[in-house]
Amino acid sequence: MSMKESVRDRILQVSERLFYKQGYNLTGINQIIAEAGIAKGSLYNHFKSKEELLMSYLESIEKEWFSSLNAFLEQQKKPEDKLLGLFDFRMKAQMNSGFLGCRFVKVSVEVPKDSSEVLSFIAGHKKKYAGIIDNILSEMDLPVFLQKEDFSMMVLLMIEGASVLGISANSSLQLERSKQIISGLLKK
Amino acid sequence: MSMKESVRDRILQVSERLFYKQGYNLTGINQIIAEAGIAKGSLYNHFKSKEELLMSYLESIEKEWFSSLNAFLEQQKKPEDKLLGLFDFRMKAQMNSGFLGCRFVKVSVEVPKDSSEVLSFIAGHKKKYAGIIDNILSEMDLPVFLQKEDFSMMVLLMIEGASVLGISANSSLQLERSKQIISGLLKK
DNA sequence: GTCTATAAGGAGATAGAC
DNA sequence: GTCTATCTCCTTATAGAC
Image (cartoon, rainbow over all chains, first blue to last red; front, side):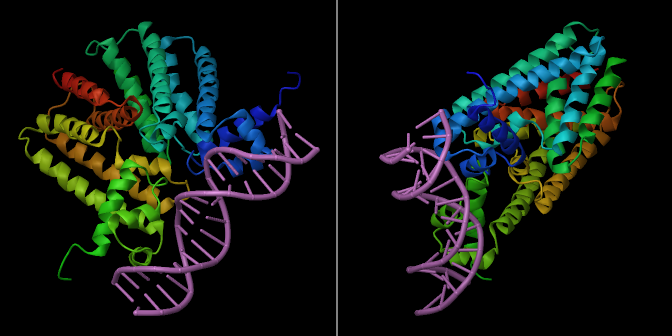
Protein backbone atom coordinates (compact mmCIF):
# COMPACT_ATOMS: atom_id res chain seq x y z
CA MET A 1 0.00 0.00 0.00
CA SER A 2 2.90 2.38 0.65
CA MET A 3 5.51 2.37 -2.14
CA LYS A 4 3.74 2.31 -5.47
CA GLU A 5 6.40 0.93 -7.82
CA SER A 6 4.92 -2.43 -7.00
CA VAL A 7 5.66 -5.72 -8.70
CA ARG A 8 2.30 -5.57 -10.42
CA ASP A 9 3.09 -2.15 -11.85
CA ARG A 10 6.46 -3.31 -13.14
CA ILE A 11 4.85 -6.28 -14.89
CA LEU A 12 2.33 -3.98 -16.54
CA GLN A 13 4.98 -1.47 -17.57
CA VAL A 14 7.09 -4.12 -19.25
CA SER A 15 4.04 -5.70 -20.86
CA GLU A 16 2.92 -2.36 -22.29
CA ARG A 17 6.22 -1.99 -24.04
CA LEU A 18 6.61 -5.57 -25.28
CA PHE A 19 3.01 -6.36 -26.24
CA TYR A 20 3.06 -3.31 -28.50
CA LYS A 21 6.54 -3.53 -29.98
CA GLN A 22 6.77 -7.32 -30.41
CA GLY A 23 3.11 -8.20 -30.39
CA TYR A 24 1.19 -10.21 -27.82
CA ASN A 25 1.81 -13.63 -29.32
CA LEU A 26 5.52 -13.11 -29.79
CA THR A 27 6.02 -11.92 -26.23
CA GLY A 28 6.56 -14.73 -23.77
CA ILE A 29 5.99 -14.80 -20.05
CA ASN A 30 9.67 -15.61 -19.60
CA GLN A 31 10.77 -12.42 -21.30
CA ILE A 32 8.34 -10.33 -19.29
CA ILE A 33 9.56 -11.63 -15.94
CA ALA A 34 13.19 -11.33 -17.03
CA GLU A 35 12.84 -7.68 -18.05
CA ALA A 36 10.69 -6.86 -15.06
CA GLY A 37 13.25 -8.51 -12.81
CA ILE A 38 10.77 -10.68 -10.98
CA ALA A 39 10.02 -14.38 -10.63
CA LYS A 40 7.47 -16.41 -12.52
CA GLY A 41 5.57 -17.24 -9.36
CA SER A 42 5.11 -13.54 -8.67
CA LEU A 43 3.56 -12.93 -12.06
CA TYR A 44 1.08 -15.74 -11.57
CA ASN A 45 0.31 -14.40 -8.13
CA HIS A 46 -0.94 -11.13 -9.69
CA PHE A 47 -2.38 -12.51 -12.93
CA LYS A 48 -3.85 -15.94 -13.12
CA SER A 49 -3.05 -16.33 -16.83
CA LYS A 50 -1.42 -14.55 -19.75
CA GLU A 51 -4.83 -13.61 -21.08
CA GLU A 52 -5.75 -11.97 -17.79
CA LEU A 53 -2.55 -9.96 -18.09
CA LEU A 54 -3.66 -8.98 -21.58
CA MET A 55 -6.96 -7.68 -20.25
CA SER A 56 -5.16 -5.64 -17.59
CA TYR A 57 -2.86 -4.36 -20.31
CA LEU A 58 -5.82 -3.22 -22.38
CA GLU A 59 -7.47 -1.47 -19.45
CA SER A 60 -4.22 0.23 -18.55
CA ILE A 61 -3.41 1.54 -22.02
CA GLU A 62 -6.97 2.68 -22.56
CA LYS A 63 -6.87 4.89 -19.47
CA GLU A 64 -3.56 6.31 -20.53
CA TRP A 65 -4.63 6.76 -24.16
CA PHE A 66 -7.81 8.71 -23.46
CA SER A 67 -6.18 10.91 -20.85
CA SER A 68 -3.33 11.66 -23.21
CA LEU A 69 -5.69 12.30 -26.13
CA ASN A 70 -7.91 14.58 -24.07
CA ALA A 71 -4.92 16.55 -22.84
CA PHE A 72 -3.80 16.99 -26.43
CA LEU A 73 -7.23 18.08 -27.64
CA GLU A 74 -7.66 20.61 -24.84
CA GLN A 75 -4.78 22.57 -26.28
CA GLN A 76 -6.98 23.34 -29.26
CA LYS A 77 -9.63 26.03 -28.83
CA LYS A 78 -11.71 25.76 -32.00
CA PRO A 79 -13.56 22.52 -32.75
CA GLU A 80 -12.04 22.57 -36.25
CA ASP A 81 -8.61 22.40 -34.69
CA LYS A 82 -9.68 19.64 -32.34
CA LEU A 83 -10.89 17.62 -35.32
CA LEU A 84 -7.65 18.04 -37.20
CA GLY A 85 -5.81 17.46 -33.93
CA LEU A 86 -7.12 13.89 -33.98
CA PHE A 87 -4.93 13.31 -37.02
CA ASP A 88 -1.93 15.07 -35.49
CA PHE A 89 -2.27 12.96 -32.36
CA ARG A 90 -2.19 9.74 -34.34
CA MET A 91 0.66 10.95 -36.51
CA LYS A 92 2.69 11.72 -33.42
CA ALA A 93 1.94 8.24 -32.07
CA GLN A 94 2.93 6.63 -35.37
CA MET A 95 6.27 8.38 -35.44
CA ASN A 96 7.06 7.72 -31.80
CA SER A 97 6.34 4.01 -32.18
CA GLY A 98 8.06 3.49 -35.51
CA PHE A 99 4.73 3.03 -37.33
CA LEU A 100 3.29 0.23 -35.25
CA GLY A 101 -0.29 1.33 -35.71
CA CYS A 102 -3.03 1.28 -33.09
CA ARG A 103 -2.33 -0.80 -29.97
CA PHE A 104 -5.93 -1.96 -29.78
CA VAL A 105 -6.28 -2.88 -33.42
CA LYS A 106 -3.03 -4.79 -33.16
CA VAL A 107 -4.41 -6.97 -30.37
CA SER A 108 -7.70 -7.49 -32.19
CA VAL A 109 -5.78 -8.88 -35.15
CA GLU A 110 -3.57 -11.10 -33.02
CA VAL A 111 -6.05 -12.88 -30.79
CA PRO A 112 -8.23 -15.82 -31.86
CA LYS A 113 -11.85 -15.13 -32.67
CA ASP A 114 -13.06 -16.87 -29.52
CA SER A 115 -11.32 -14.34 -27.25
CA SER A 116 -14.63 -12.59 -26.92
CA GLU A 117 -13.78 -10.63 -23.78
CA VAL A 118 -10.74 -9.13 -25.49
CA LEU A 119 -12.52 -8.40 -28.74
CA SER A 120 -15.54 -6.78 -27.15
CA PHE A 121 -13.31 -4.60 -25.00
CA ILE A 122 -11.60 -3.35 -28.15
CA ALA A 123 -14.90 -2.84 -29.93
CA GLY A 124 -16.02 -0.82 -26.91
CA HIS A 125 -12.85 1.24 -27.00
CA LYS A 126 -13.43 2.14 -30.64
CA LYS A 127 -17.00 3.07 -29.86
CA LYS A 128 -15.78 5.49 -27.19
CA TYR A 129 -13.33 6.92 -29.67
CA ALA A 130 -16.12 7.36 -32.21
CA GLY A 131 -18.06 9.21 -29.49
CA ILE A 132 -15.22 11.70 -29.12
CA ILE A 133 -15.34 12.45 -32.82
CA ASP A 134 -19.10 12.84 -32.61
CA ASN A 135 -18.77 15.34 -29.80
CA ILE A 136 -16.25 17.44 -31.67
CA LEU A 137 -18.45 17.53 -34.76
CA SER A 138 -21.46 18.56 -32.69
CA GLU A 139 -19.84 21.92 -32.09
CA MET A 140 -18.98 22.55 -35.73
CA ASP A 141 -20.43 23.67 -39.01
CA LEU A 142 -20.28 20.76 -41.39
CA PRO A 143 -20.13 20.45 -45.17
CA VAL A 144 -23.66 20.73 -46.52
CA PHE A 145 -23.38 17.51 -48.50
CA LEU A 146 -22.75 15.29 -45.45
CA GLN A 147 -24.83 14.29 -42.46
CA LYS A 148 -23.08 14.63 -39.14
CA GLU A 149 -23.14 10.86 -38.53
CA ASP A 150 -21.69 10.17 -41.96
CA PHE A 151 -18.93 12.72 -41.63
CA SER A 152 -18.04 11.33 -38.21
CA MET A 153 -17.88 7.79 -39.55
CA MET A 154 -15.76 8.95 -42.45
CA VAL A 155 -13.24 10.58 -40.13
CA LEU A 156 -13.05 7.49 -37.93
CA LEU A 157 -12.59 5.09 -40.82
CA MET A 158 -10.01 7.23 -42.55
CA ILE A 159 -7.96 7.50 -39.36
CA GLU A 160 -8.09 3.77 -38.74
CA GLY A 161 -7.39 2.93 -42.37
CA ALA A 162 -4.48 5.33 -42.55
CA SER A 163 -3.11 4.03 -39.28
CA VAL A 164 -3.16 0.38 -40.31
CA LEU A 165 -1.79 0.97 -43.80
CA GLY A 166 1.03 2.95 -42.23
CA ILE A 167 2.30 -0.26 -40.63
CA SER A 168 3.32 -1.95 -43.87
CA ALA A 169 4.23 1.34 -45.55
CA ASN A 170 6.31 2.50 -42.58
CA SER A 171 4.77 5.89 -43.00
CA SER A 172 2.43 8.46 -41.55
CA LEU A 173 1.81 9.93 -44.99
CA GLN A 174 -1.61 8.31 -45.10
CA LEU A 175 -2.60 10.16 -41.94
CA GLU A 176 -1.20 13.41 -43.30
CA ARG A 177 -3.19 13.04 -46.50
CA SER A 178 -6.34 12.16 -44.54
CA LYS A 179 -5.94 15.31 -42.54
CA GLN A 180 -5.60 17.39 -45.68
CA ILE A 181 -8.62 15.76 -47.30
CA ILE A 182 -10.83 16.31 -44.26
CA SER A 183 -9.50 19.82 -43.89
CA GLY A 184 -10.36 20.54 -47.52
CA LEU A 185 -13.90 19.26 -47.06
CA LEU A 186 -14.45 21.61 -44.13
CA LYS A 187 -14.00 24.61 -46.42
CA LYS A 188 -16.79 23.56 -48.77
CA MET B 1 5.19 -32.06 -63.80
CA SER B 2 2.27 -34.37 -64.50
CA MET B 3 -0.19 -34.55 -61.59
CA LYS B 4 -0.65 -31.10 -60.12
CA GLU B 5 -1.95 -31.83 -56.64
CA SER B 6 1.67 -31.82 -55.58
CA VAL B 7 2.99 -31.80 -52.04
CA ARG B 8 3.94 -28.16 -52.43
CA ASP B 9 0.39 -27.26 -53.43
CA ARG B 10 -1.08 -29.11 -50.49
CA ILE B 11 1.22 -27.27 -48.10
CA LEU B 12 0.16 -23.95 -49.59
CA GLN B 13 -3.53 -24.81 -49.50
CA VAL B 14 -3.40 -25.72 -45.82
CA SER B 15 -1.29 -22.66 -45.02
CA GLU B 16 -3.75 -20.38 -46.76
CA ARG B 17 -6.52 -21.62 -44.54
CA LEU B 18 -4.60 -21.66 -41.26
CA PHE B 19 -2.51 -18.51 -41.60
CA TYR B 20 -5.72 -16.58 -42.13
CA LYS B 21 -8.02 -18.23 -39.63
CA GLN B 22 -5.53 -18.71 -36.78
CA GLY B 23 -2.91 -16.16 -37.71
CA TYR B 24 0.65 -16.75 -38.83
CA ASN B 25 2.22 -16.80 -35.38
CA LEU B 26 -0.34 -19.15 -33.89
CA THR B 27 -0.01 -21.64 -36.71
CA GLY B 28 2.81 -24.13 -36.21
CA ILE B 29 4.68 -26.15 -38.77
CA ASN B 30 3.49 -29.29 -37.01
CA GLN B 31 -0.16 -28.46 -37.57
CA ILE B 32 0.47 -27.63 -41.21
CA ILE B 33 2.17 -30.94 -41.98
CA ALA B 34 -0.44 -32.86 -40.00
CA GLU B 35 -3.36 -31.34 -41.91
CA ALA B 36 -1.53 -31.57 -45.23
CA GLY B 37 -0.76 -35.21 -44.51
CA ILE B 38 2.94 -34.91 -45.25
CA ALA B 39 6.18 -35.19 -43.34
CA LYS B 40 8.24 -32.42 -41.85
CA GLY B 41 11.19 -33.18 -44.06
CA SER B 42 9.02 -32.68 -47.12
CA LEU B 43 7.98 -29.25 -46.02
CA TYR B 44 11.56 -28.17 -45.49
CA ASN B 45 12.43 -29.63 -48.86
CA HIS B 46 10.05 -27.17 -50.54
CA PHE B 47 10.46 -24.20 -48.20
CA LYS B 48 13.69 -23.53 -46.43
CA SER B 49 11.99 -21.78 -43.50
CA LYS B 50 8.60 -20.80 -42.15
CA GLU B 51 9.15 -17.25 -43.34
CA GLU B 52 9.82 -18.44 -46.88
CA LEU B 53 6.52 -20.29 -46.69
CA LEU B 54 4.92 -17.04 -45.57
CA MET B 55 6.27 -15.25 -48.65
CA SER B 56 4.91 -17.98 -50.92
CA TYR B 57 1.61 -17.73 -49.08
CA LEU B 58 1.47 -13.98 -49.75
CA GLU B 59 2.27 -14.40 -53.44
CA SER B 60 -0.32 -17.11 -53.77
CA ILE B 61 -3.17 -15.25 -52.09
CA GLU B 62 -2.36 -12.06 -53.97
CA LYS B 63 -2.76 -13.79 -57.33
CA GLU B 64 -6.00 -15.35 -56.21
CA TRP B 65 -7.27 -12.11 -54.67
CA PHE B 66 -6.76 -9.91 -57.69
CA SER B 67 -8.15 -12.46 -60.13
CA SER B 68 -11.20 -12.94 -57.94
CA LEU B 69 -11.66 -9.18 -57.49
CA ASN B 70 -11.32 -8.50 -61.20
CA ALA B 71 -13.83 -11.22 -62.02
CA PHE B 72 -16.24 -9.64 -59.56
CA LEU B 73 -15.76 -6.13 -60.95
CA GLU B 74 -16.23 -7.24 -64.54
CA GLN B 75 -19.80 -8.13 -63.71
CA GLN B 76 -20.46 -4.43 -63.26
CA LYS B 77 -20.88 -2.34 -66.38
CA LYS B 78 -20.91 1.22 -65.09
CA PRO B 79 -17.86 2.57 -63.26
CA GLU B 80 -20.16 3.73 -60.42
CA ASP B 81 -21.20 0.14 -59.89
CA LYS B 82 -17.60 -1.01 -60.01
CA LEU B 83 -16.71 1.50 -57.30
CA LEU B 84 -19.54 0.37 -55.06
CA GLY B 85 -18.68 -3.19 -55.96
CA LEU B 86 -15.38 -2.76 -54.15
CA PHE B 87 -17.37 -2.49 -50.93
CA ASP B 88 -19.59 -5.44 -51.81
CA PHE B 89 -16.56 -7.56 -52.54
CA ARG B 90 -15.05 -6.84 -49.15
CA MET B 91 -18.35 -7.34 -47.39
CA LYS B 92 -18.70 -10.74 -48.99
CA ALA B 93 -15.16 -11.61 -47.88
CA GLN B 94 -15.88 -10.45 -44.34
CA MET B 95 -18.95 -12.59 -44.04
CA ASN B 96 -17.35 -15.65 -45.58
CA SER B 97 -14.38 -15.46 -43.22
CA GLY B 98 -16.29 -14.62 -40.06
CA PHE B 99 -14.97 -11.05 -39.99
CA LEU B 100 -11.28 -11.79 -40.06
CA GLY B 101 -10.38 -8.66 -42.02
CA CYS B 102 -7.81 -8.34 -44.77
CA ARG B 103 -5.34 -11.23 -45.08
CA PHE B 104 -2.50 -8.87 -45.95
CA VAL B 105 -3.15 -6.38 -43.17
CA LYS B 106 -3.35 -9.28 -40.75
CA VAL B 107 0.15 -10.42 -41.66
CA SER B 108 1.50 -6.88 -41.54
CA VAL B 109 0.29 -6.59 -37.96
CA GLU B 110 1.67 -9.97 -36.93
CA VAL B 111 5.22 -9.87 -38.21
CA PRO B 112 8.11 -8.03 -36.52
CA LYS B 113 9.16 -4.71 -37.98
CA ASP B 114 12.40 -6.14 -39.33
CA SER B 115 10.57 -8.52 -41.69
CA SER B 116 11.14 -6.00 -44.43
CA GLU B 117 10.55 -8.36 -47.33
CA VAL B 118 7.14 -9.26 -45.96
CA LEU B 119 6.17 -5.70 -45.14
CA SER B 120 7.22 -4.25 -48.46
CA PHE B 121 5.33 -6.96 -50.31
CA ILE B 122 2.19 -5.97 -48.43
CA ALA B 123 2.81 -2.27 -49.02
CA GLY B 124 3.16 -3.09 -52.71
CA HIS B 125 -0.05 -5.05 -52.68
CA LYS B 126 -1.94 -2.12 -51.21
CA LYS B 127 -0.43 0.18 -53.81
CA LYS B 128 -1.75 -2.08 -56.57
CA TYR B 129 -5.14 -2.06 -54.91
CA ALA B 130 -5.05 1.74 -54.77
CA GLY B 131 -4.28 1.68 -58.49
CA ILE B 132 -7.46 -0.27 -59.17
CA ILE B 133 -9.51 2.35 -57.36
CA ASP B 134 -7.72 5.07 -59.33
CA ASN B 135 -8.59 3.38 -62.59
CA ILE B 136 -12.25 3.06 -61.74
CA LEU B 137 -12.46 6.72 -60.75
CA SER B 138 -10.76 7.77 -63.99
CA GLU B 139 -13.86 6.69 -65.91
CA MET B 140 -16.30 8.52 -63.65
CA ASP B 141 -17.74 11.93 -62.92
CA LEU B 142 -16.68 12.89 -59.44
CA PRO B 143 -18.13 15.20 -56.80
CA VAL B 144 -17.04 18.75 -57.59
CA PHE B 145 -15.61 19.32 -54.13
CA LEU B 146 -13.04 16.51 -54.34
CA GLN B 147 -9.93 15.97 -56.44
CA LYS B 148 -9.72 12.54 -58.03
CA GLU B 149 -6.63 11.61 -55.98
CA ASP B 150 -8.31 12.64 -52.75
CA PHE B 151 -11.52 10.79 -53.48
CA SER B 152 -9.53 7.69 -54.35
CA MET B 153 -7.54 7.88 -51.14
CA MET B 154 -10.71 8.40 -49.17
CA VAL B 155 -12.28 5.27 -50.64
CA LEU B 156 -9.18 3.21 -49.95
CA LEU B 157 -8.84 4.37 -46.35
CA MET B 158 -12.52 3.92 -45.58
CA ILE B 159 -12.46 0.37 -46.92
CA GLU B 160 -9.36 -0.53 -44.92
CA GLY B 161 -10.62 1.20 -41.79
CA ALA B 162 -14.00 -0.47 -42.04
CA SER B 163 -12.40 -3.82 -42.68
CA VAL B 164 -10.10 -3.69 -39.67
CA LEU B 165 -12.71 -2.33 -37.27
CA GLY B 166 -15.00 -5.14 -38.38
CA ILE B 167 -12.64 -7.63 -36.76
CA SER B 168 -13.26 -6.53 -33.18
CA ALA B 169 -16.88 -5.59 -33.90
CA ASN B 170 -17.60 -8.90 -35.65
CA SER B 171 -19.48 -6.95 -38.24
CA SER B 172 -19.53 -5.76 -41.81
CA LEU B 173 -21.74 -2.83 -40.87
CA GLN B 174 -18.78 -0.48 -41.17
CA LEU B 175 -18.32 -1.51 -44.78
CA GLU B 176 -22.04 -1.16 -45.46
CA ARG B 177 -22.04 2.35 -44.02
CA SER B 178 -18.92 3.26 -46.00
CA LYS B 179 -20.63 2.16 -49.17
CA GLN B 180 -23.67 4.28 -48.39
CA ILE B 181 -21.56 7.32 -47.58
CA ILE B 182 -19.53 7.08 -50.77
CA SER B 183 -22.67 6.37 -52.76
CA GLY B 184 -24.27 9.49 -51.29
CA LEU B 185 -21.28 11.63 -52.21
CA LEU B 186 -21.50 10.49 -55.82
CA LYS B 187 -24.92 12.12 -56.17
CA LYS B 188 -23.66 15.55 -55.17
C1' DG C 1 11.83 -36.39 -52.72
C1' DT C 2 9.62 -38.27 -48.81
C1' DC C 3 10.05 -40.30 -44.63
C1' DT C 4 11.19 -41.01 -39.16
C1' DA C 5 13.60 -39.51 -35.33
C1' DT C 6 15.70 -36.13 -32.84
C1' DA C 7 17.64 -31.90 -31.42
C1' DA C 8 17.59 -27.61 -28.74
C1' DG C 9 14.93 -24.28 -26.96
C1' DG C 10 10.74 -21.75 -25.50
C1' DA C 11 5.87 -21.71 -24.35
C1' DG C 12 2.36 -21.25 -20.34
C1' DA C 13 1.50 -22.83 -15.96
C1' DT C 14 2.13 -25.08 -11.14
C1' DA C 15 4.18 -26.88 -6.55
C1' DG C 16 6.18 -25.98 -2.66
C1' DA C 17 10.18 -23.79 0.08
C1' DC C 18 10.88 -19.60 2.52
C1' DG D 1 4.05 -12.50 -1.63
C1' DT D 2 8.23 -13.74 -3.78
C1' DC D 3 11.22 -17.17 -4.84
C1' DT D 4 13.37 -21.71 -7.31
C1' DA D 5 12.55 -25.79 -9.57
C1' DT D 6 9.91 -28.44 -12.41
C1' DC D 7 6.23 -30.18 -15.64
C1' DT D 8 4.19 -30.86 -20.01
C1' DC D 9 3.76 -29.50 -24.37
C1' DC D 10 4.92 -27.27 -28.46
C1' DT D 11 8.12 -24.57 -31.41
C1' DT D 12 11.35 -24.34 -35.71
C1' DA D 13 14.71 -26.83 -37.80
C1' DT D 14 18.03 -30.71 -39.04
C1' DA D 15 20.18 -35.54 -39.84
C1' DG D 16 20.06 -39.40 -42.05
C1' DA D 17 17.51 -43.81 -43.57
C1' DC D 18 14.98 -45.28 -47.54
